[in-house]
Amino acid sequence: MLVKNFKAVKYMSTFLCFLLGCSEPQPTVYQATGIKIGEVTDSEVIIWTRITRNAERVGFGAPVPDTLYIHPDSGELVQDPVWPATPEDWIPVVEYPDGATIETIEGSVPGMPGETRVLYRKVDSNEWQMTSWAAVDVDRDFTKQFYINGLEASTEYELQVEARSDGEFNASSVLSGSFRTAPNSEEPARVVFAATTGQAYPDQDAVGGGFRIYPSILELSPSFFVHTGDILYYDQWAKNLDLARWGWARMFSLPTNFDFHRKIPTYFMKDDHDTWSNDSWPTQDSRFMGDFTFEHGQAVFLEQIPMGELTYRTFQWGKDLQIWLVENRDYRSANTDPDGPEKTIWGLEQKSWFMDSVQASTATFRILITPTPMLGPYNEGEIDNHTNLEGFFYEGEEIRQFLASQENIFVITGDRHYQYVIQDPETGLKEFATGPASDPHARGWSADDIRPEHRYLNIVGGFLTATIEQSAEGPILIFRHHDVDGAVLNEDLNMVTR
Image 1 (cartoon, rainbow, N blue to C red):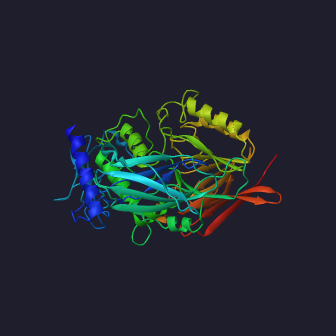
Image 2 (cartoon, helix red, strand yellow; image 1 turned 135 degrees about the vertical axis):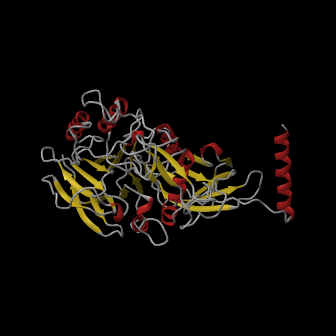
Image 3 (tube, one colour; image 1 turned 180 degrees about the horizontal axis):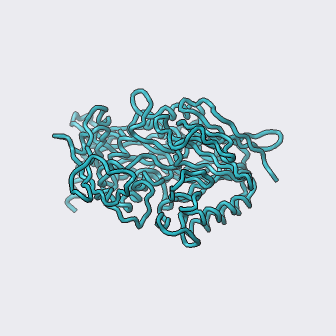
């Protein structure tokens, strides 16, 4: 009760000072990790916010922690595990440079208690609607997500996200943003979306920090963006919860990422590297990630991006496009289990949901977006996917047979650090790999290894776009691969089949 009375008095004092023009200094908070706009439909959206102590990230050139490992045999500290040895028994030791802390290392953006709210309006309206002020969650990295409904379909909205210190009257930080809602399911419409994968902090390619794909995508004015997973790479540095959160802060405070995500709604997906570690699964027994667990990774993902509780979902954009975003980590069997009817990546519930919702769909074109490929080809010996005999091939065949039974359905995949179009010679099913977010991250396949199923292969960074166009003959779906500056490298046009 004392706390409540104190707050009431402080609010009244602040309000009187506001009216009388008092010069009392006010604490200041910021939003240096930006905002994220997600899960947009024809009537709803989720806005992600975070309050920060400082106006800017700790700059390039500041120290970063060094991760050493205890050798499982000798007990000595070594710089890196001996690859390709399995790293489960290598125990990490994180060492900070003298005087450095989690709050002073490069890219750090410490959070701060306070309150946020969202104001929104149609672009042709003078009247703002707004949420109530709400406190950020100090136990979830000082974040808050706002679920906004009652929006109009095919409508451009402006945003203002405000932040203020606890007990203060005025906002000390205001970020603007915008998004467009989806067309309703009966409306033929032009829709453009972009997708990429493999966004590694050391592989930035933009002057001043960040990734060149983001301004390139903005020039295309997409309806939405899909990040297919590997949004960041925990493996070598996220050895505890604080360091995992540091990774998200330093990635989304980069200038290109900060600017992009306040202007374009995004559907986020996760894969191995932004869940826990390379090729990971829920029951894996490993000491390689130190104090950071698989369960931590699942929780941090839902904390750091705008999303509901389920990480598999489907969205329809007008009469002619529906997308499915699937979850490839949370429900999977151990990669090392023998393949067969019981081994799964998707899990029975998700698989049933996918097949039922695809069959119920009325959209002209349907696209499965998956963090890992359905068609491949894959490098020999990899067991983390649906394409290799040593992995999850049995379930892969089940899903591929289902996809082959459907008309006008396509697959977009992340994970591969190169671009491709593969067409199954028996069914005609096509799979499009987005490629990684930058050229320095492009690797993992030989440009000379062109298989019969390849319709396009390029070991480059960039992104994929999919465009629904309306024509006199009917809707058309066009896939385009782009380089990091937006130039079109390959085009694949698809008409309606009956």
